[in-house]
Length: 222
Image 1 (cartoon, rainbow, N blue to C red):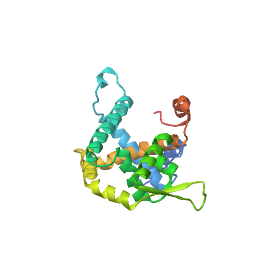
Image 2 (image 1 turned 120 degrees about the vertical axis):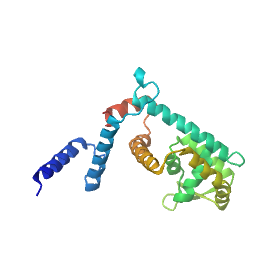
Image 3 (image 1 turned 180 degrees about the vertical axis):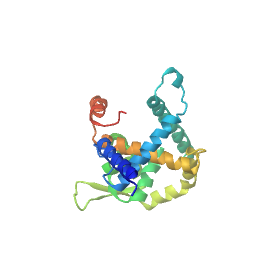
Image 4 (image 1 turned 45 degrees about the horizontal axis):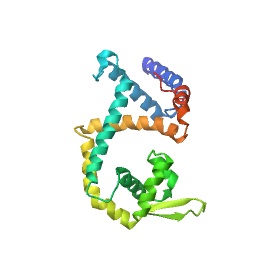
């Protein structure tokens, strides 16, 4: 038996336990492997740091990430706007709501709004517009008659399918010139960020308390 290797694995497990006190990674073999993978990626990144605008003047990586995410969102919206230019869709959110309803089936209004990371007033405006166009319908919930369940209609499916070709092209353009490996790595990283932010968003913390609460309660500072 290779006792040196065994000791190194045990040391790694001990380090995993100390660094995973917030249980971000599950306490399983898969969680342990994911933790090791992320640590290796982090070490590689430290030795292969990319350049970003303003880096030489002290601009932080966090600032660059925030700005680039804003830019990419604007690029994506521009392509989405082009994809629905000759349609009855008012905004890209209209067809995103329909896509979610088609993919996941009937749901409550608030569940759909939360899935799309919208505030209630904005989400309700979109739902009202979709109802007016006849693209979705609402029914009473069997479990709670106070809740309305919404689902996509045949007209909604037809509206989606009529423009789905352009929508798919728009999504392909957003991914740009990334190769398959880069796309998979980007999905992994964005999923990690989404898993961090979604529980915070779901708490509906008041804006004046949001930054203070996240800074004090959530482990993200390296």
